[in-house]
Length: 105
Image (cartoon, rainbow, N blue to C red; front, side, top):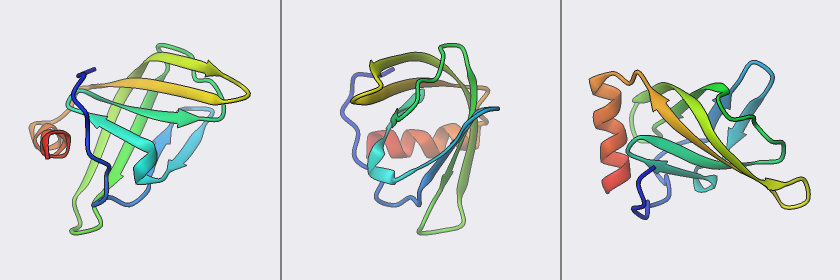
């Protein structure tokens, strides 16, 4: 993950994160976008190496970014929640360009 501070996702609708067992719908301000992944909070832990799907839907246009990824870290506890770090895998050039725009604006 990049250490760069990221702006909130004000131009996006809620972010959907899905695994085989879990489906999370997150408010845009609960997700931190990096150029190669995302971080978000979860009430339940998600095991490292879990494959996930992330959907970002723009509120300004019909643009949607669908991405697959892998959880690389999950820290926290059941009392305060878990911070999940996920890296993207197999992004198309178009999706990568849109995410770069988000990460560096």
